[in-house]
Image 1 (cartoon, rainbow, N blue to C red):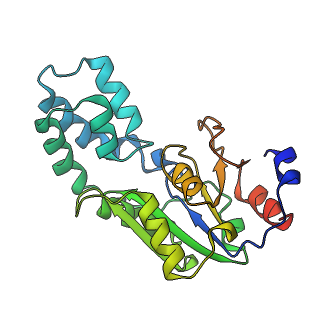
Image 2 (cartoon, helix red, strand yellow):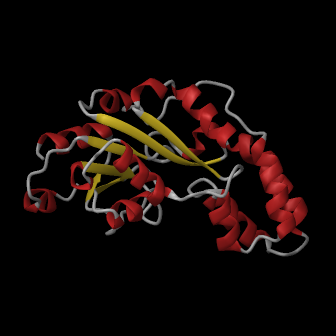
Length: 224
């Protein structure tokens, strides 16, 4: 956590927190690499030498941290690769229980409104929520689905939550791992952004604050 920055901030009354799911509440790869294997195989079969094997592996690694549409655009998937990936990912869901990062008790204990905004395939993301058993902890859950209407992106979703629940942006935290997604959106809307430095998540200067777990987030909130 950036202690000097915490001390420099004006005291604020935090009323709500907007959380990300993957690599914030639970590791994206907790579902097991075998779950994504059919989708990766489908992409590889549709590749037809568009990408090298090294480039494919880089794209598959990004699938654990970014939505498919972002990965496809960043890595130059062909239309056939995107179509194969969409068909495969749409059928995936978690079958067993998930534990998350092991500090979810601290999240549940936060004495304020909690919202969850996650991007991905609706069936898969819903199955993760069921596996974690955390639906009841949130005032509202929004899945920015890549397999339904065109994805909206987190900024307009955040804006709707602020307006719908009459929350001043300066009284809301955005908590997540991705500097290009939820943290950038929170910054643009004037909210305080907190990056969760979970294992493997590189620290970004985009975030106002950094925490390693939800216990540390609770202590940070106590000082605000």
